[in-house]
Image (tube, rainbow, N blue to C red; front, top):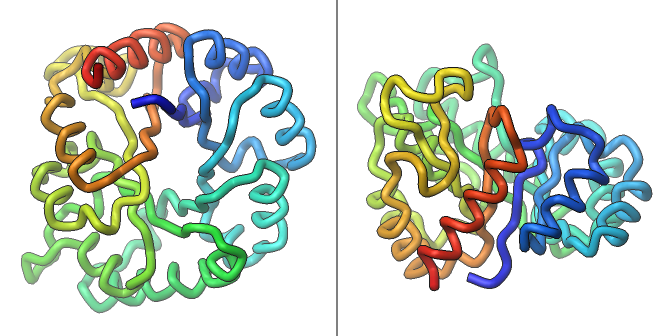
Length: 250
């Protein structure tokens, strides 16, 4: 695994951005993934990436921006030479309650992504845990999202699948051809790291990343994005995680 990306949301509590980018470059990262809090000045973001020698092939964009301000989202993508636009979340009050609602949501994502696909970008959905909670009929929301949006890619957040009490390996096997990127994160042993919302540095938790990486490689996934939702030390997380990932793939 040559090029490893880093979701900059992991370092949102450790500004400034320039310091974060320098730290990541020094640790051996070559790519980063953007998120909404960074997009106020697309030109400045692009310049900061260039100065640090880092690429930003993918970014997270809220559905409101994709639907209501697509020109602004496109400006961010163009300023950073982004190749992949990912919608990352749906607030709980907006989540459908049945299969038809989730299929309609997938169709909504499909429609919102059309201008970006027309520009040659990949468009996808990033999961959390709620997409794996069975509906009253026993079906799973993620299935309906992907059915409703047949050209949508899937940025598979592997640890959130596990937190949703689903089997990541079975989902990778089933939908590997839809996976355009994978979030690499880890879950602390039960009762540990409460101050970090139960997450762990990659390779220091309970996720079987050796098997997971093998499955993702078989699915021909090429973009791996390191993430920790709430680290109390982003440098520690970034350093230990890239070391673990490289050791697993050598």
